[in-house]
Length: 264
Ligand code: NI
Image (cartoon, rainbow, N blue to C red):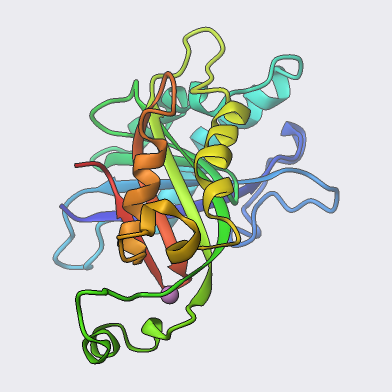
């Protein structure tokens, strides 16, 4: 299956200012000199690739449809419901229905609402009742990649400078994805603050500003590679979350490398 994903960035100016041509789809439209929220959707569509043009879809079409449907729908919700907070998880299915039809012969595969640069909600074809929520966290830690059963020379050959005796550090970025059905009343997927507190207690407090090999029992006999860190974090969180399912753990060791685990 071939897919195309388009990010649509928008600012939440009042409805009466949102008319007119898109003048800045890169940084977010409508343009506003005032301070307004800035959000983004990511829409993924599938379909056949036209053998003549080589296109599955002109990305500008996805942009236009998402702006006319999901963005308009969300702006209306946020404008009308000033006294009852809009839950992103609770409105995604309606945004999906508004967006899927105008895409005609293309299939909407995934719709993601990026509420902040660190928090995103998504819904995928096949199960529109299930929403995933991904929140980012960060921790700094030191580690040494070293397997005691191997010789120093083998360790240096396999792990290079990562086997240096006194270790080195990373600023890790952790993305935790949970899945579940939003509450039919409130629209909330989970109590976000409670979820964050669980991750803070179970993971961040245990790993942040630690030397993983020396300070963390998980790595007393386990090489703290990014793969093993990801697996250890999965084990720290699984069973600690209530009402939702742990869906994915992704750990960025550097801006160029991440490992992710979705369960056994
Ligand atoms: Ni390292």
